[in-house]
Image (cartoon, rainbow, N blue to C red; front, side, top):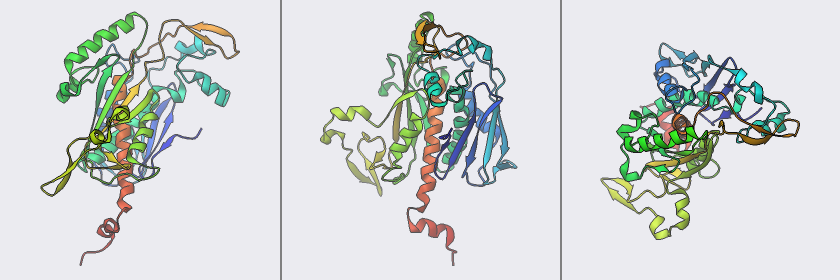
Length: 368
């Protein structure tokens, strides 16, 4: 299969399957000299690993990252960085009874049609476990961005009908609840809603919001590699994401130009905006404001309630999915969205180094 590589200057190649021996990523284009340890990568992986709470799958995986190449004495060498996480708690037998059926909401049918053969154990490459490579690489990209004064924060904005209003955000509470919501009170309401989903053998979707702060103006390429277009592609490539919006998103369809435009003003030599309906991008380039994106995440397709389906022989049948599955994907996907945003920004920043002749002159011309 193709399509396992993302990026232009800062690239990643993810590899491995849900129930294979291991899963991982190769990062190419990371500059030399960046301080990097397995512990730093682990802080990101711990946010997406299973078994964190009753709202995640009970699969027990330590998801310990191993650096195989590209780092020497705690610093990146400029060569490809290979990261691996071993799968330790596969229970492939959970899928034996459904191996000949197409699970509703999964990629079973489409994979079967494309390849005529599929790894039915947990979804193979389409499993959420594929995101381990993205998150490990995202940890490296985030570290690179932090060194440039750019910070990314992602969190759960809503689960089901429980939506946190912007004026109620308490960012310091994001890591105080298992749902990664920036308000503990709303998180408690969402937890009660999820309890009802679990009792009814159902699942829930939600929305992840991601903000990027410290972006300089002018990052992105104006035609096919627009900042907002690349962010949308990156986040939409996450399996459970069904929609992405930047800034006001779909609300702009109901706005007027007089209210949707963000007025500029000058202050202390800086060009600023009075509002941020654009979500930090204009013409596909960063405008120096906070970049805001949201991702709509579908309900977990693996539910234990009986569903109608078809088997590989074209016979109508019914299926009840057993095994260990998340009643909601959103909390574990927060760090995945954050990682894809970091990878995109790092890639475009490196592309941007050739935008002006003075950038190259600063690097290559010797000072007299």
